[in-house]
Image (cartoon, rainbow, N blue to C red):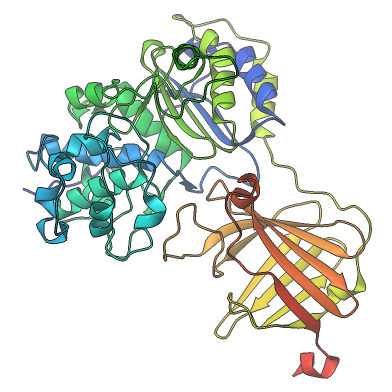
Length: 517
């Protein structure tokens, strides 16, 4: 029988004050002060006993926008598996090959033959490294996954594997006849009142599972609260308690994963040190990480977090852009964990400055250094390029820069403020670059600001506020020529590991008559 969504759902979690829920407001204020300038925090929600007690979004990021969750997506995929298992659709001990006999390789290894759903759930496939980049080049990702050798016995070792989660998505769709996002609608999204969502798909129309899910920050908090409540929501047991307990336990050891011993340190000493200091070496459940302090979390690249603290009845959600994810968690343990008390507290004098700090969270717009070139009022014919752009134009006033790229069938336009963000909707090839590339492209909201870096260099920062990412677009003027360079923050942070796929554009200034025509 088809499961129907509840006709009436509550969109927002209830609100309260920190003190009413036994939390020191001053400690939350210290946390915000500690992360400011060190970590680019985009949103923050602190939930205690089912009530949101602190929330803030760093402009131009905003409450009502969905956020690309990166690998938090994995935990939603595992939840779909939990529903399917509870409905008797399949079991975690079922062999993966049995779901896709037509895509099996000609010669099936003993390790592939032994691979089960639970091995996918616990990242213990046995493949060396993360085969994502190999698999996503192909049209049939299932077949491509089976073609990657499994060097170690499944279950014997932990290794992070994005495509293992994709395979879970493929299994759910194969057995249940629906994409993950549709299968979860009456079971999870509908009951939790999660309305705004998007999930990227592979060429075969399967939600990619391991990444690509976009939800609002509050929706992430609801997901964490469902886990904190061991699968119950508004008096209904949505997901079996036993599944939540298994999923959030250390089913697979992650202790020896990516261990690098320091100088003069043995491997055993390194493991002991990481067990104390690292939240990535506490064990792994069903697409959930164990944390120190008996907590667990869903997390995604560049600082997307849903941290569940069962003993403290708390959920902490952060979306951000940082390469120091451990450092951001360390701030949580240092400032927020000790702030949680069993009883309500008297009003804290820090409550008013806390509310001001939350309301004034912002990523500042960049500031110009010097005045600009007169060539920033011109149109340029571009040399042939792989982006397919034919012409570029710039129109600059004291407070706004309008940048256009013309293609054969459409024009991409971005308005950038000087010293402020201006909202746009942008649909341009290669923008923003995918963390793991696939062909799907859709228009995204972008907040843009421009600044001069000297007289001949105009830079624009395009912040895709529905993702953790932003681009810096640089226009360099020389006589009657322009050079336009794109740089993703992800590429810049990779320190040479990856290269920017978008080409550098070269252009010559158009004559007034050519521009007019």
